[in-house]
Length: 142
Image (cartoon, rainbow, N blue to C red):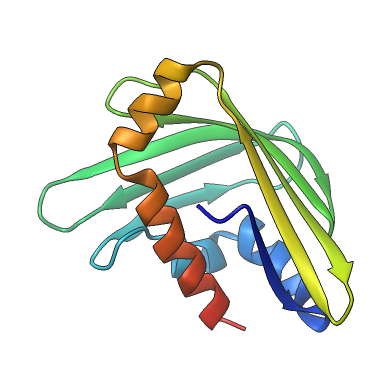
């Protein structure tokens, strides 16, 4: 997963909304080609829930649950998430920051995992490839 991405400055609000609005999340956060997200719950006020469910349409799938901890419109999103593989992983802390940077917007995402076992389990799923494909898809939305 790329640690940071850039978009033109005028799109900072769109990038923020693409990370918080269900109808937009379902367009890009899909993982590898052929996967879909039929269920997307993103209740934006802090303390509210997140639930994403993915399927490959062939019987495979998984889901993620979590909650928002902090939302600063157009600049910062902090949430906790658990991947269900099928049992839930320990809490993963995710901070996404958006900053104007010259003629563009810099997005930096930091995921803090509780231990090496959780990291190994998540990487074993191919998550980094799915995230890379998703962020390429997001870039094409702008």
